[in-house]
Length: 184
Image (tube, rainbow, N blue to C red; front, top):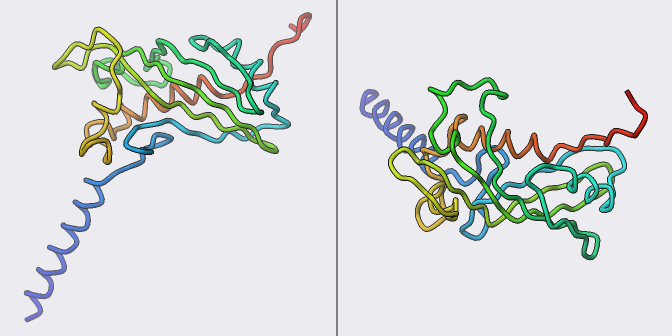
C-alpha cells in the first residue's frame, strides 16, 4: 500500500540521518586520524617558505621550541586559551572547558607554493568540564571522541565547542607579516 511505502521511506530517512549524525569523524579543521583528534588546516599565502613559517611561529604567543628539519617546521603549543568573546560568543553559550581550558600539542608546519599547512597532534587539555575538573594535561581525544577514538563526540561537534577551538587555532596560526622597524 502507498502508506506502508511512505512509512518505510520515512523510517529509512530517519535511520540514514541518525547514522550520519552519529558517525562524524570531522568537524571544521578537526578530524580523527589513527584514533586521535588532530587539527589540520591549509592556509593560502604568498611565497611561504619553511624559514618564513618558523620566523612567524617564533613570535606567536604560546608557541615554543621552533625548529626546522628537512624543510618541515615543528614546534610546541602550550596553554592556548580560547578568547570566546573575540569570536562574539557569550559566556552563557560557551561550555566551561572552552572558557577555562588550556590546550597544548605538537605543531608541524609544511609549505608548498602559495600555501602552508599547520597540523597540531597530541592535543592535550586541562580545565573545567563542568562535571569534572581536569587539573593536569590529559589527551583531548579521551573527551572529544567516542568508540575508542573513532568517532567525534556529538557534544563536541558544536559551534561552541570544536567550533570555537577551531577559530582559536586558526586565528593563532594565520600568518601575519611581521612589522618592520620604522613602520607606523
